[in-house]
Image (cartoon, rainbow, N blue to C red; front, side, top):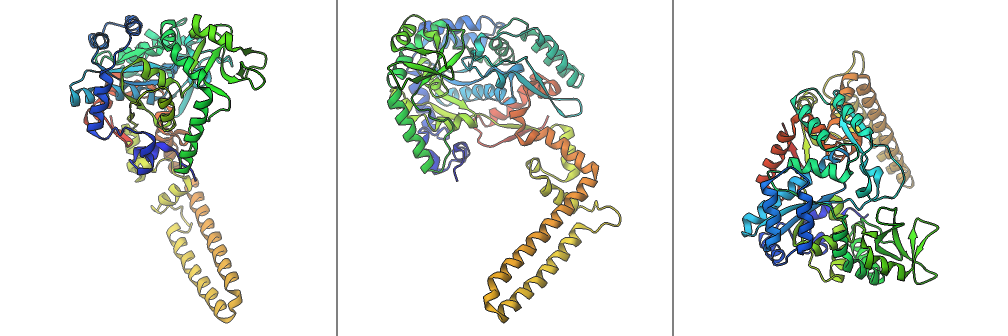
Length: 540
């Protein structure tokens, strides 16, 4: 059975090593990649775009110094990126930013090379539904979803602006958060940037820029005409080499499967690693797919339009912003434009970086270090008290309810007159021993019945054990207090069975702890270990 690549990579297993060539755990490899990246220099036109974008935020001496380091040359970039979600999106986007800062500091300290953290705003993407909502725990701890009005247009997020409902959503957020200075500070920061008429990307970037002003985190929006012009040669190469790239990616998928790993991103037949914007740069975005009946391209998902080779070449020459990258080409553009020493990746990105070596080879690039972002689970005081009361560890939360009920029911909370679960299990074990003895005597007396006796014993054992599990589950369900406590723990730590950091938005913690306090907790952990591979706990 295949499995995700990321878990094997994080564990340092030998099976994962061939797929991401540079091991971030090795200090010598980190130093070599950092020095090699610093030997490249970003184009002056690109630095000019970056400088102009930083000017949109409140002054930051650290940010200015980082821009000038890139302008001067001899500096390396530690990049990360994320879709620009409502109110900073899920917590892991914030953790990515903090990780990029920490990795840049660590590499600079190890090598003496100036290292600059850069957050690539993924504004090219068009999946509005994925970024249009934020989930926040209300004052009882239950998850609540806030969402922008949606539609099914395929517009890049860069071309979407906040509507009039944003003020109402911020007010609704204020009603969900516990009142106090932490909530007031969080709401004030969001109100300053999530403003009607502002682009979604600018609102997201403004909050991150304010949070990480002292650390000099650079915010880069690639959906700009000068950036597209610099990326146009990459686009041309991707179009010309669409067939060989597809073949190389399919071979890579075969190699991953042979090693027991899943392929994160499907290799689509006949598709380039690019999207085309119908009608102009701000138009809907469709994947380019080679027309099987001609020399041009169809727009996958768009039934009534196509692009000839000549029209595509003209767009690349005159208006390259009419093209944008897929997930498998975006790293190539990033690492061509910037002197990237390392990319800070989440688990999903680790999975698709395992696919990317042949794409880097095609473009004649050396891949950067791929460093896992920090993963955190926050246990506030109430959650810690609930865990202690139930005698559970945080890792227990999210396990099957039946398993947890079985553990908790043995603690003595049995209703009056009801059999104790431990006594029931002991009685079942005794009865099974009698069934075993009967089965053995039947086998000795009539050997042809051996298989039937064994099957019967197994069926009886399974039925009895299932009955006891259902009994234990029913007892726990009768104990409403236990059920409610488990409900609260799951809502806090594993809502819907998913990791906390993938469900709750940044305001859910910042609005309870305070933006500065949350950042301090995270940065302190990262200062101690900037290259973590395991989930860590925060206990404010």
